[in-house]
Length: 400
Image (cartoon, rainbow, N blue to C red; front, side, top):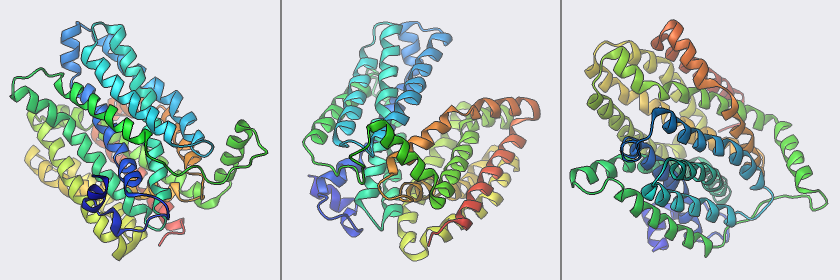
């Protein structure tokens, strides 16, 4: 089965580290898909869960706070551990956590039970998603960007499948929690496959150092490397670029006057375009290289994004969101891959450092600015600044 999936996903067409099996490569590749599907389903079903359990808005907020709070604590620790300990237990824990959490959400009888499920989701996300990020880069030396593009395609598919599954369940007049149960059981099976599959271990470690001193030494090594610092800054720019996207539904409804259904259509067009863009990225990387693609993407962002924001009418925005999405799509997989490969054997440390970006109150500052000067100028300013930061990093980095 895994050999067939490796053939279908084209994993045998790109370089792979000696000793890495089809099964290990395929299971690692599906980690982010599981993470996106697992996180998407409970969020889409929040209105149903809120009504069934009689939750107030405040209680719903506490559930989300449990999710993000647990992730903020666990992700830096789990990422740092990637360069010190075996990766398979981290993967298994993450998959088990997601499977159990989805089943807990499906059967939650009270607010406390639901909050505990969201807490478990936050604790499972980093060990699964971050570990697969690092593993895939290490498994495919010389093809880090290409495997990143394929991984992001599966991420996007998982993000698209969550609302589609909920919508299909509603159309069939089935219990809306059915996707949670089916996905939870499937993810537990995925955890079982991971537990039985050897995975590459961490790279260079100093046996004379204690774990705490090793973490510190790894951080000093990463922060002391010029190339790593450049890509850490680029990842900060990418994080900043994500903030306006969080406010797009609010902006479309409030500033543009789009209906809820049109907001959903707009999001679907974005997702479908992103999948096309990632497929093109995988084909273009061997021909043009990451520097030319990232440079072109940044220039296109500087031109297309303001045009999309300023053009009048929902229909025109629905058309222009296609080139905007095509321009944004290459940034995350290419920047992430370059950051993870900047210092050999220290991808986990890079992930741990970038996890700390979540401490910055960027969404709150963005919302404050949007309330003061308006969402449209704030979105233009933040997106343009983020794009220029990434472009500057690309021009300074040693990248082909």
